[in-house]
Image 1 (cartoon, rainbow, N blue to C red):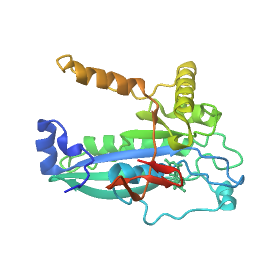
Image 2: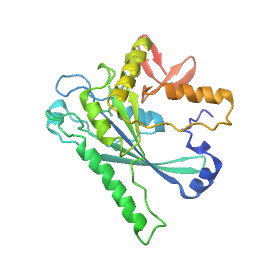
Image 3: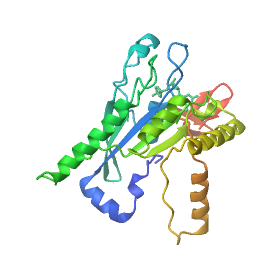
Image 4: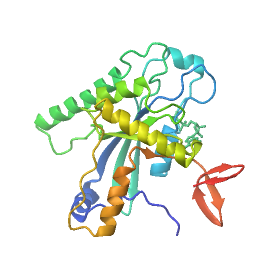
Length: 261
Ligand code: GDP
């Protein structure tokens, strides 16, 4: 069967055995600012689409989209979407934390603050639970990772991107991604990536560092690992639709000139 897999079922065996019994919690935050509200066009950076593509599910069934006018007056909000995913007998309780309204207001001074406060609160809650008497069934609501979406339409990072990442980099693992990469040519992707890397460096932003791979891995794996690390920020493309390409059904974006898989 052509069932697709996310891949958490292939974690190392030890982790696997424990998790099979209990299932585990994973909380992923998505953030990033689209184009300014009120200028027309789409403001979204494809955050929900990518999450749905990553986890092959529809996390946002009950989402309400705001129009431009509503967006500029809205304050930053923290929303949570939870799904239970089971794959080859492994249970995952996935929570997606989204930050609608981030960067949409006219005055965005410290608009990262509610997000930072939210992350801090989850740490405090976990700390309290761990120091409490009933430690068996603690629910881990800490934010484990934050995928930060960077607009493909700018020239590198925007001031708000820098501000957000600098405010949050001590609190959460930040993985920067270049959103909607299908809107750029390969050369433009490379240019954007270089610019973003330079700026991350220049502003002292500490993004998530992927762990070293084991020294006893084979050469091919090491090269692959190296190539992956060098490609940060990852260029991503999301799609909620399945299209047919060369007789295969793939998740992709159908354009008049072809399909982006
Ligand atoms: P969000 O507001 O950041 O969650 O953005 P959405 O996921 O709702 O996407 C906003 C719009 O961008 C929708 O019309 C999507 O179809 C479109 N979109 C999402 N991902 C991509 C992508 O990778 N490339 C392109 N070109 N468009 C995308």
